[in-house]
Image (cartoon, rainbow, N blue to C red; front, side):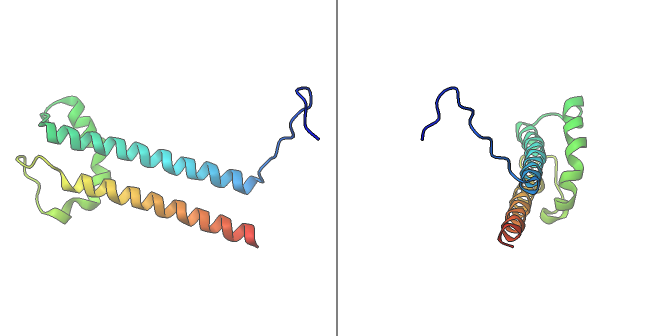
Length: 116
């Protein structure tokens, strides 16, 4: 039996746990995307040689400083002559991998819950 134009299509509702996990995944992706965009802007400003005295550059460095801080000591001291900020690139990779791990963990928990 086919449904005509006047017949309403039944709406299938996900249970609330699946909906909540989908929202949580979207929030994680959104937050990581914002982090990645800010860090990419930091790297681009550094590579372009933007003056640190500029208010916008100072703002970007101020906002992204806590994101880069855990990775500062990995590559030694950063000089003003270095065009590439390796700590920021490492932070971008680490946050992307962390988001992927959180997403995989969420999928594993959801799959385990659905199997039970």
